[in-house]
Length: 149
Picture 1 (cartoon, one colour):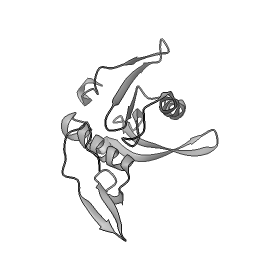
Picture 2 (cartoon, helix red, strand yellow):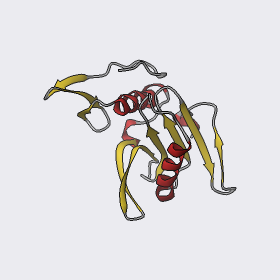
Picture 3 (cartoon, helix red, strand yellow):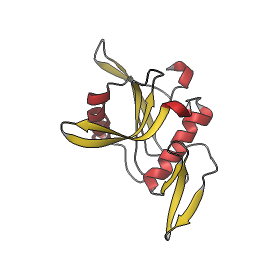
């Protein structure tokens, strides 16, 4: 897999039925090792190990109902009351972060109404904070520490 613009972590990778799998510490199971999953695992470890996000408040592959269709958010950070606080969308390193990616995460936010949106392809990371009182969003210079949320 490609090196990412994220800190190293000791990924647990195995071969099962001829395919590589990686251990997801949030779901507590091995999942198929795709380029997007490579980004997800590195990014969630970055959040927990370097930014102080509690593992117990992060969840991967959260299903939601969007206009009658089932969609999945890649990662969601919850508040202590279990309301959603942040949506994180991952793309493979080879996928450019475009307006279409932001449109996708914005559609998910129509359901969850979070304060923060993050998009990452493992190389480039974008985070914005939404101010619902002014109906504006601000791109942040870096991914905030959990204590700053």
